[in-house]
Length: 148
Ligand SMILES: CC(C)(COP(=O)(O)OP(=O)(O)OC[C@H]1O[C@@H](n2cnc3c(N)ncnc32)[C@H](O)[C@@H]1OP(=O)(O)O)[C@@H](O)C(=O)NCCC(=O)NCCS
Image: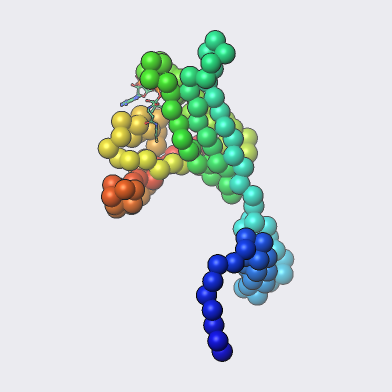
């Protein structure tokens, strides 16, 4: 058989992978449980963007990506002059509330362990769950999380 490996379209990729995954889950778990797993597998993630505003201006923002029972905190920052006044904690509190409302039991994120934010997250009850060596421009990254 002549085989060629080449770039394919997103549509072709999605259709093929979706069919294969659905069928193998049904083979492995039976029709009912296979379809339950398939629905979880194809759950569409939801992105929530939260901001802290003062005088009509954004002074802090955070993104939250909700997917299958956990919510990942993405880019998160408070404007430099406003740091240390509890705005970060308030944003994180709202993120927790939002995650809980969407059925999540866990918040997680990745960060650089030598960044000041690492201590901030630790103070907010996050623990380091994993460290990925030389993952990001040659630097270590860590995954931090806390149950809600
Ligand atoms: C991390 C960040 C969002 C925190 O926001 P913030 O509004 O300054 O945080 P808060 O004022 O709510 O701080 C809450 C607590 O964390 C502590 N904290 C905040 N920044 C800290 C730091 N750099 N080192 C140690 N502790 C810190 C505060 O002392 C405070 O503790 P306390 O209540 O016991 O005094 C903000 O410092 C920031 O924007 N940093 C730059 C961007 C960044 O690193 N983002 C995260 C990338 S993963």
